[in-house]
Image (cartoon, rainbow, N blue to C red; front, side, top):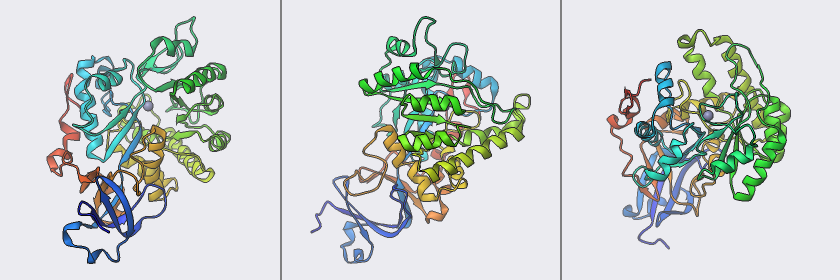
Length: 424
Ligand SMILES: [Zn+2]
């Protein structure tokens, strides 16, 4: 029955990405890089030793996916540095993008969806330099986002000309990507609780874009906070709502009904609270904490209503570091009432579906044997994700992932960018 090439991996616990509780003492059978079977670990001891890999002291879980990052931005809290990085050239940004990808990789995040940058540098990097075989992190990027003139969004994108519709601007730029990012509200106020802004685009303009995007096989992700901006985007048929602070119950119900994804980026608000002292003039920490509490309530409601929630960090925002903020966002999902396994489901299966990645997302027969290995038990997650035991890619322990302590500290010191070292 057993072929010689098969590997029976005995694991202490398995979290498969579907959201159900961890299963103890399982055997994952791998052949030619694929999972062919998973069974209860009762008879495995009878197998010849050369066919068995012992990970009984570990928990395995699917590869993580961060559904919202900004690879062109660091999570630095230094305002001067943040302004400089916005003006940086493509050549200056390349080492920074690569450093951020290493940070994701070292935290078990092997797929990210970018949220846009003002010069389209991430998209250019993907076309010209990215080598997923050297560092296996998959990246999807919308390039430049679209916002309305004189409204929020110039940090990450461009606006249509005066005589142009949103769709015309998208067609004129014709960026080489199947992901379109639209900014449809302002930022959240850090000094007035629950302050809302007007939608940037009408339902008609957004709807026209979404119809054409569907025809072209593109997905539309929409930055939107507040009731009206979110409702406009959902009714126009967009694929996902990014952030969605203060969107309200009706919008969540509508999202559940229509199957629209939500990426709530909760940790951004906590990071503001943690770094408020650096921004005293523009941040009222009490308001930020209220914003955070409100978003946690919305996430709890989304869980109750069955909204598809994918986990994304918005890393690159103030105080939101690439890679490690994944753990912070997971902790907040759990604070909102998601179980550990459900949280991991949002960071794996839901992310894979949102990004359209069929080889990632879950650990199950028929899929490539891609998974993370953390020493210990599920109760030590998500903390242990910061120092993984190893990761398996296509059935083999990854050569690129080294448990070298210096390697994991790369996230703090290595990046040599345009003004010397990346500062945090
Ligand atoms: Zn963003």
